Length: 142
Image (tube, rainbow, N blue to C red):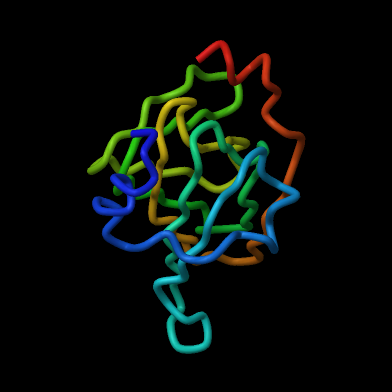
């Protein structure tokens, strides 16, 4: 799904604004549309949209207990990969459960826009650690 206008028709939660606050942790351009307000809800949900080829860096959602992340795939096609495992193709309707303390990355395929709702799972002593970028060599092998 390379056509941005066609993608926006099926991206039901909206692209949102450029994800400038986290741009240094992404290769390519991403967008963020918060769906809940952290001031009024204990669970933060956001629709994250990736342009074709965009992916975030390897990262870890640390937690003493609980924690982790859920990805609810909503539009386009993407990739998810845990360190040491094969990448998983992401399509609308899929849900990925990412346990706390697991190094991983996610993003769009080269030829498609991609959106998922990211859910930060509540936990004790949670924090995110951003690691190295996913290299072009790693990404282009998918």
